[in-house]
Image (cartoon, rainbow, N blue to C red; front, side, top):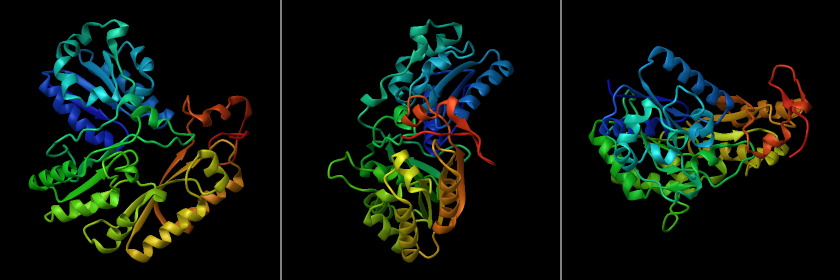
Length: 363
């Protein structure tokens, strides 16, 4: 049996898991399970650890490799687990050079590595470029995902992801167009553009092209593509070209998932978000004028430190104000090392009816 990859978390991880699978097979790994983890919540990390222990019971002779955002942000947590053979960082997991040059190390891993050898995680903030990984499809998915961007330059007070993914970096437009064309040639009718902060696309590329220009170039140069979809966006970063494309490009799907997080302006400020409640409402109103059939989803965090019942009610009201038809609602999850965690102390926690514990304090 070759390598099996188990994916947690986002579409970006799904895309990268296909790359990992191919690198692991090329390295000749057998009876190996790679867990591509998520760090966005404490629950995601807990599920990864639980899966590792279950796998070790069910497949005692398998080599377990842990990678992904949780491995990047908490390498020692996983290195301390006796079931884990090796821990790889987010840069190492998608590097063909790493997998080929360290095939011997990965093969020796189940026989026991010392602590220094077991953790292979670099400083993700030192990574300045992101490479396009040319794959002709993703096993088990009718849609193809194309990574156009990685990392994030923003520092929301609740979010650990920049420390797992590094700073923002983008794939040049020509490479993206080539990959989309290749996927269409392999029979894919729909492509989804993915990234960590996709509306931050192009900020560090020559000429600073925006996401809207990338969308236009894909639709222009790959006329055979039937449907183009974009993943979660930060509405405050949406550029004019993107809005125009939503209005006049029928092949750009009328669906946007918005990274809203909250409906109260004070909480948004404490989260260090860059939009206000009125900005979110104005954005959805504007896009509906351009594309009446648009459908909106959104991310909402409940129980952020200092949130009151009245503040929570404004988040609920925002659902109707923006006309959101589907939601990703998360209880606030304390992530060590983030500013929000500093005020989320256990000594000041109180319970609010119907929701998780929230803390008194200020940011």
